[in-house]
Amino acid sequence: MFLDEAEIHVKAGQGGRGAVSFRREKYVPRGGPDGGDGGDGGDVIFVADGNLNTLFHLTHRRLWRAADGAPGRGTNCAGRNGRDSVIPVPPGTIVKDRDRGLVLKDLTRTGDRFVVAAGGSGGRGNARFATSIIQAPRRFEPGRPGETRWITLELKLLADVGLVGLPNAGKSTLLRRISAARPKVADYPFTTLHPHLGIATASGMRTLVVADLPGLIEGAHRGTGLGDRFLRHIERTAVLAHLVDLAPFEGPTSEEAYRVIRNELAAYSPVLAAKLELVVGTKADMPGAAEALRRLRKALGVPVVGISALTGEGIPALLRELFRIGEAARTPDAAPPARRGSP
Image (cartoon, rainbow, N blue to C red; front, side, top):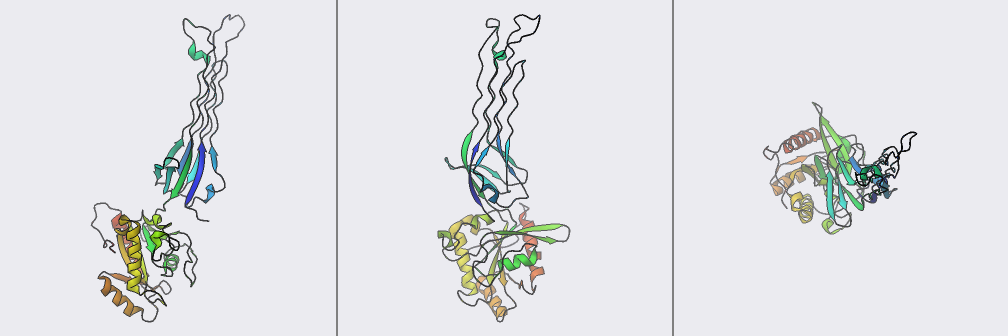
């Protein structure tokens, strides 16, 4: 099950208490204090795990707590430090403080670590307080409490290409065609209820991560339909592949469908609307699709790649263009390889 939001409570371990002890050995009178320090409490740590792509594993556990430090002991023995509590999350997870509304960390790469709650330090034992004046102190320190806070987690999928379009534009069918991903495909709207990731491959061990989003409709930025809940998953993409149905049975024409999505992207985020865009006309095998493709190119004034994910028509050309744009976008100094989107 896909889940891109979670709320958990984290509590770091408390430091152990320092010991009050005195050395007692045969033939050694007045041995002096030898109380050891308490151990430090464990930390609560987030770690980006590349094997995860959802926050679903956090739904059945709301409290994540690290172990307390052990108290100090005699003969200057320090207490053992508490064990850390490590929470794996997918790369692309944003860690927020729920109560203050602050972004604490953005874990974008596999292996990134962030201590979200630090454990308390252990208290000092009485051996630490011995002086030339006070040679038998009974003073010690209790361990300090660990940090505790409520955390909100928000996942933004990491992908090179984001597929956008109206429901039934052919996004899931295309993802199945170019990758091993198997999103549900059916002849009714909103078949896709959550994002899917697929990896397209090319010669030379080149890969392209593609994200398929649930279909958008007019008013999505205001919460209509599936709303804007999943739009954040394409905020990190380098390029948008805007899929337009060339043979709609009903509803808006291809040109109108394109404008609907462009307006929704602009209303949601100007930054998102300004991303590099490749327009893709789908279902090119349907009757009348060739004429619709010609009209769409003329109306938009930009190149439009015509494809049929069912027959494979145009797929090699589309992949070449996506790889070209995606790889160029990874190079900061490269010239824009495709047009910037505009409503």
